Image (cartoon, rainbow, N blue to C red; front, side, top):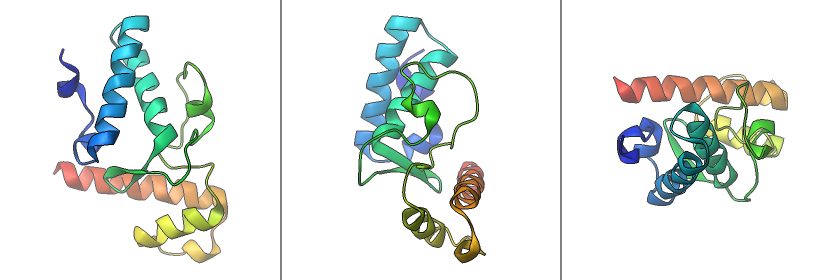
Amino acid sequence: MPVRQELPETLKRSPKKARETWIKAHDSAVEQYGEGERAHRTANAALKHSFEKIGDHWEPKSKKGPSDRQAARHTPKRGKTAEGVDANASKQHLYDVAKRLDIPGRSTMTKTELVNAIKKANRRASAKARS
């Protein structure tokens, strides 16, 4: 299946560089591991080094690097991720993202709570964009 048809909807609403990053990593992973879930996990991990999910799309990060423990792995395994939220970012950055997403109660949240609230807001925004 052509990779552009496999492109996640959130990437279709994202900058060209994000799409190119995902496609290049996906193509390389398909060559190494074959088509399937592992290629998608690898492409997503590569994307998370330079981009973070904000609402229903991906935006460039101010500082490159893995966004969570899974993205830091050479070959990401199945398991929990921060779903594109830059969990390694500062609490202030996460607060600013939460503010952009209009998350209530953000000022009293811990860093972990901010990550979880942003993940939830991102899921809602993506679902809304699909409908």
